[in-house]
Length: 202
Image (cartoon, rainbow, N blue to C red; front, side, top):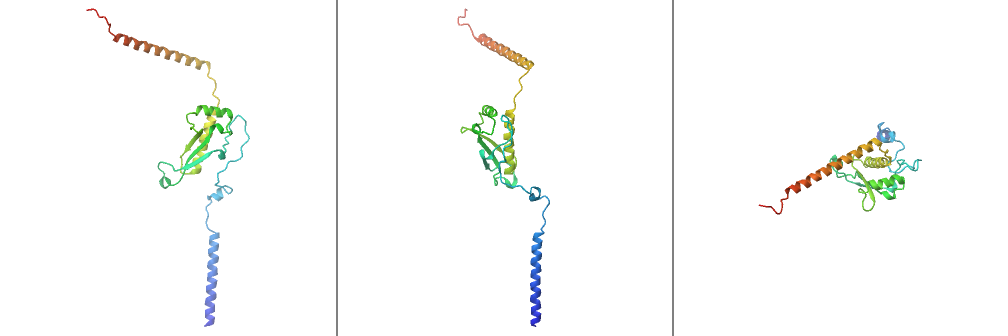
């Protein structure tokens, strides 16, 4: 009887050990897709940071935007968005003081200050917003790309107009001035015709 009990106990212990080994082995050999992030981007990190400034010409914008000199505010996006709407702060407000932006070439910065003077707040902040997607990172990337495109747009030097173009503009201005004077004379004559003589002889 004791021998039978000992055999049962040994069998139970062996079964438990084999079950634990199989469970641990199954956890170690669990399936992971080839498209998982740690396989596609093995050295990536989700923390937002600014890379080192690239070497570029002094009077040209290199595309480098230091995130530590920007104010990035996240808020809830508007519009349709399924379960994410009104629950996740995905909208991005990117703002900075334009007159203190030393990472923009001085010549381009002066053009921006002149061209965007109606879009700068009283405190001197220029604001760019993005709610294109339901992802914070994608909206931040979109706002930064908007800023880069805007700076590069003001950086382009406009070509001087040709002589033919200047002559066409001059003729159009003269024509517009003649038409304005003609309409002015017509209105004046119409008002004069409406007046009646004060001393009407019967």
